[in-house]
Amino acid sequence: MSEKLHPNVEKVAAALREHGVTGEIVVFSEATPTAATAAAQLGCEVGAIANSLIFDADGSPLLVLTSGAHRVNTELIARTIGAAKVKRATPEFVRAATGQVIGGVAPLGHPSPIRTLVDPWLGRHEVVWAAAGHPHTIFPTTYEELIRITGGTPAEVE
Image (cartoon, rainbow, N blue to C red; front, top):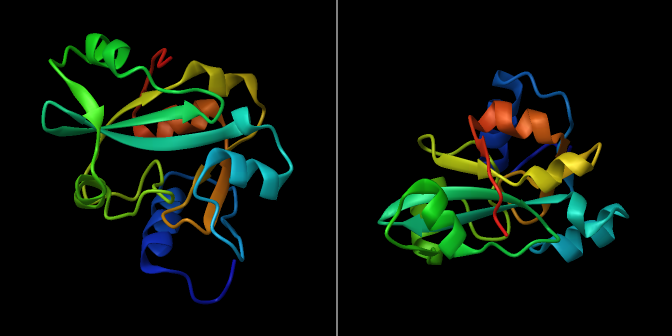
């Protein structure tokens, strides 16, 4: 890691340490705002990228950690959590819920815990990569570790 990290990345790094995560945050010289760009930088399958997507579920934030190879079915998610409506969150909603910007949202390090669903497809990869609070950062983890550190619930999302 570089000497001076963005404050959001510092928060994520602290949260990772608190949860006993040993994977080191990787800092890229260029932003990796999509699963495809992150996979290209890492030389891994796009499905091994854990997208951290924030949705507006009846006005409350919902974090869906999904394989980069999947698209989230909001109607399925709404049925899964018992919400009347689940929709893509606005950039302002995402920042308010996470303190982070779209393209760099981490699975943790938010101002307060966010209800989380974790795509079981991530379990097909020995190592998965998740954003670390900024579009230039990512860290290695596992499906099981994502569930543990987020308190997330495994759920089909596609």
